[in-house]
Image (cartoon, rainbow, N blue to C red; front, top):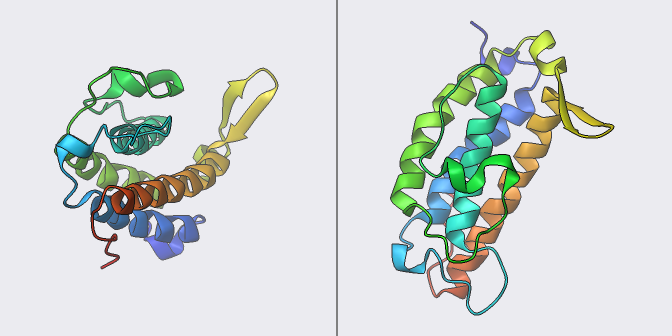
Length: 164
């Protein structure tokens, strides 16, 4: 079994580990009453952002043969955008799903073979990315989502996100 420092995607695993903690910190203390609050805008609310990040981790784990799904899977499958009037899972449900999939995916990332990382994922006509490229994009997207949730914290009157 490889260690993170021996992995060909060591830097991405380092970001993964940071973002595993930052995601939970971004959600810390936010009430479920605020999870759907869009402040009269068209912006994605915290419930959609959080669920989308959780779905992304489950989707990446499926690339490595894991067949689990998050509780809100049907709301996010096939890259669904925010759905007006839908009731999204609680933030606690997302935290539990995050805690369930994160060690599974981390283990898959640490032990990923060159062949697994080179598998092409079809994204549409004439568009394909390798699993390694999708891991890099997913890392970028997770950081973006965490930043959006951190901004929502401030807009909704919560203290800033803690990094430790």
